[in-house]
Image (cartoon, rainbow, N blue to C red):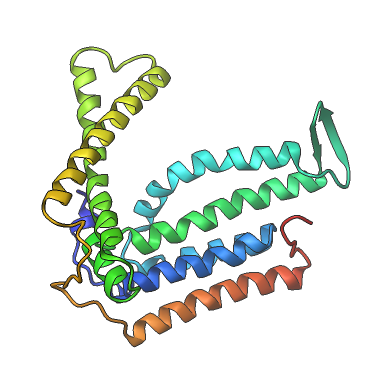
Length: 260
């Protein structure tokens, strides 16, 4: 558990209902999936970064959590660079791969778009308590309790995977196995972690069934989850952010519908 996780929850977004945060993620994602252009993605990314102070997360923490996204985003960009429909000046071809002006622009747009789609998830849910999310899904979104409790149980075990990975790393180093073969070590540890996850999930499912969590009954919830005017403001802000990004793309002439 980090200092961010235990810090007092006094940020503006901490008062927004988790269901509203889910709706905000959908609002921010769908329009960005309609158009593939660098302008709308860049504008959305800049506006999202300007909203970081509302989340209570320091910028250094946001940058740290974006590292995995920045490592894997170029994979999507490279595929577009090589296999997108060619257009404009062609710089080189090899078998089915063609690098042209259009593929360069499209790969850059996809790179920005992946980051712009991942950033809201980090900002909106980094400080969201899984229990509050479950309360909101059951009481506000009216989802089945069995599904909600399964989501809650899964969310609670995510932190255990981090602890397992750290423990395995320390154990391997203590045995003198952690100084070489980084790629092979990663895959072997990932396989062990997968085995741990399957075993833990099976045990957890059996325990929950034994305690009656799978029963088809009307359940009560100890903490009420309601909507407030702040939720409307937050959702309107997400709509406004998307509108600004798409308007900038249309005005600049960069707007490009997916598939065209």
